[in-house]
Structure formats: structure tokens, C-alpha cells
Length: 506
Picture (spheres, one colour):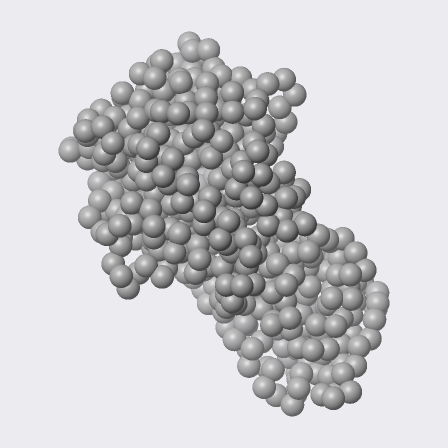
């Protein structure tokens, strides 16, 4: 769990609930202000996934209003699906105007860097789901040229038809935002059944075929939400917070980075007297106090956790895109109200100390996972027993941790079952339980033996993992386990983990 995630469902959230207690008037005002406006509603029958997709697409649209920056999470989603290499994604990120001044030595890692008001900041290594360390050859990723053309067209379309600070050809813009939001969904979710990704099963689709997957009802909804910016004068208010720059000039920074997390739905409006941090929402219901108080805690937490004052945040706000309602507060005034008279400086210091402890604990866990992975790689150099888990989604993607399958060596005196549970939990965060033996494989040349078992996931929370495309697996597997693994995949055992107990080549 990232440190910032603790604001919603962890120790930082518990701290906020205990210390930031006077939120009733603020949440009531949020509900009252939004109730006064008629929101944009989806077509009948919209499900939960549609609401979340609109939230992502609206965030991308608002980000483009502020800065011509890479769609970071969308690019990461393409990497996670195995459609593109990490190096390709960073090359695409470096092509955006926001990264024009990125130093040459950082451009190979552009996807993980973001601008501050006077420099650059990086998402810490290991803070997000892991990327493949060995990208392979470009010819192994046939979709890259088509996707590069799509992003090139998108950059040109936004620059011509919807530059920063201005609405424009919103139907075309909405189509691009919706498609990028589908890519973003793939960052942390199983997206293979999404309409856009089904097109990749028989081969590489065209740009036009991808764009055609966006439903007209979604375009109508997105256009109506964009028009709220103009009809309610919310865009003028956002522009004012940015110091009223000339038309076409960036208003600030899209997707600022706080501690170990990039906030894709946050906008930083860089005014002359300090910046305004605005979080974008596409919800209709704003009267659920448990949720709205968390919005306030998140805003104040991000402002306070910018310890180096890299963004110079002096104002925070919420923009409710379906209502066209923007609400803002000076950071100190919001803190004083939430603290109900408690000392602001003490509270800020306590929050930062807690966040620092959580970050240190995260760093220790990541170091332990890296140590286990190093042991796993080193164990291949000497005869030993190792366990690995092949966790598949049943459609061709396999879960990997770093550049290897989850697992590690079996310690002296340790049972294979215990080693499996320990090493998989350490490298992925998932808890597994062994099942029946399903196959035995022997490689006569090397003497390696693989015992394959069915197993099941019993709990845990995945962290620092990503989905790997099946074509990438042969380079990651010993020959005997490659045969066993692909047999299991070909058998179509949907969502069945497989484990290996193997004697590596001497």
C-alpha cells in the first residue's frame, strides 16, 4: 500500500479521524453547494464500471486543460498488458510538451518523472506495480507502431483543437480521453474484456478501430460534462487560480507527485501567490459524509506532506465535474477548521512523522522483496530446491514480481509447502494454499525435475506485481518449468496458480 493510500484506508486515515474532527460544517456545505446545480447524468442502465470509467476520462480531460502532459497511468496500463515496452512508454512520455525541459539523463525514465514548479520529482522505484526489467526486442511488440501513431495524433489533436485553458472540439477530445481512460484502467485491473483490448486478440487493430470502440452515449455524457466548465464559469475560476495566463499557456501541473504516489485526478494551478491543489470528482452523490470528509483529509494531507514546498500549495479545492461546482479553501483556514482549535504546527509535524514512518516501513518491505528476488536469481547457479507460482488470469497473462515469477529458494529444513507460502507472500503480498499434484516433468539433459500442483489464493493484497504477456515467459523460465507452465496454460485452468519444486541446472 502506498503511503498516500493510508489516507483512505490505513493509519493516516485513522490519524485524520482522530485529529481532524470538525468536518460536519464543511461536508454539509459541499452537499448544499452541489445540490443547487443540476448534474450531468449518465444514460439509463449505467453500471458501476461506467461511473469509474467516466471518472478516469474526466480526470484526463481536466488534466489536458491544465498541462500537455503524458497520460502517465494510461502508458503504464499498456506496459502492464504486455502491449508495449517500458522503454517505449518512457519515450512517448518524453515527447509531451510538459517534458520538453527534462534533463537528457532522465529521459530514458521520463514516465516516472513529473515537473514541480522549479524542478523534477520521481515516483520512487518500487512504489508502483513493478515493470518488466528486460523489455525484449521491439519486434516482439507489434502494437507499438500503431499505438505510437495514436498518441502522436492525440497530441496534435489536443494542441490544435483543445489547447491548455480552452474548450474546443469536445466530441473528438472526449473520444480520445475515453480511450486513454481504458488504457489507464489496465494499470491495476484485468482489462482483457474491455472492448478496446478484445481487438488485440486476433492481431493489431488500427487506430480507427480502437477509436470506434467508444460508445456514442459516453461521448454525449463527456461533452455535457465539459460544457459545465463554461456554463458555470468553473473554467474561468480555475484559470483565475492559475493567475490568468494567456490563452494556450499551461495553467500548472497535471498529476502532481506526493511522497510515493502520482495523483492522476489532481490539478495543480500555479498562481503568482502560491498554487491551488484541486481534486477532480465525477460523482453525483456528495452527501455521504464518510466519503466527503476523506476528500478534505486527502487535500490537507497532500498539502502538508509536500514537506519541501515543491508545489507551494496555499489553496486546496474540489471540482465536481458533473455539477460544474468548484469549492476552494486556503490551506491554513481548512486546517484550523478541521483541527477544532488544536495547534496546527504540532498536527502537521505529527502527520509528517507518521508518513515518514510508513514510508520507511514500505522501503523495508521492498528491500526484503528485492533480497528474496536476488536470492531467487542466485539460487539458479547452484543445485537447490526452489518454489515458484504461476498465477494466471486464464486468458494469457501471468503475474510476475519484478523480472521473475513469484517465489524463492527453499531453506534448509523447510518444507516445500511452507517455502511456497512464505516466498510468494514476501514477493507479491498474496497468501496461497497448496492443492493436489497435477504433473511431474523431468528434463533428461539437465536432470531438472518440476512437480506441478494446483493451488489457490486464500488472501492478501497484491503489491509490486504486474501482469506479464505470455509470449514474454520463455525468457524467464528454465526449460523444464517452461514446458510445465505452458502445459498448464494450454489446459485452460482459469485463475489456477501453479507451483514448481525444481532442481536447477548445476
